[in-house]
Length: 124
Image 1 (cartoon, rainbow, N blue to C red):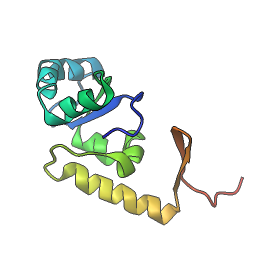
Image 2 (cartoon, helix red, strand yellow; image 1 turned 90 degrees about the horizontal axis):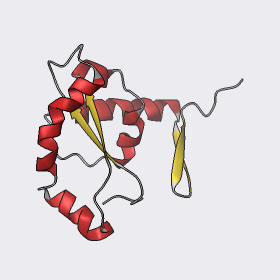
Image 3 (cartoon, rainbow, N blue to C red; image 1 turned 135 degrees about the horizontal axis):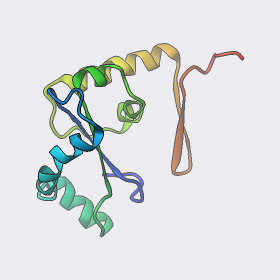
Image 4 (cartoon, helix red, strand yellow; image 1 turned 135 degrees about the vertical axis):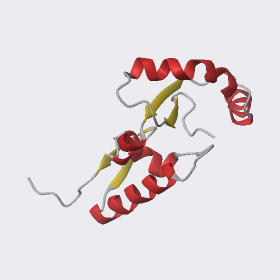
């Protein structure tokens, strides 16, 4: 369950065949499916625990965009709850976790917020 109920719910969807479509057009593809999310046990559990619906932030990426490790993936290396995966997301998160470990990256938590230090030994 969410650690910070005031935060949004990031929904990452990896789709093939949406290359070249704008973010808006990608979201349009999902709008009809979003109602189905409300029928899931995870959504109902959120409502039961926090007494309000989560704010959903959709992210639609192609497999190639995922492989470029956008900043969103940083937090997913520690906080993701994967509802369905064909293996694509698990593989990329594994690769990113290894790279973060190689760099000595650190996720610093301060209260209810956090930030990443990707290269702690970097000298200016």
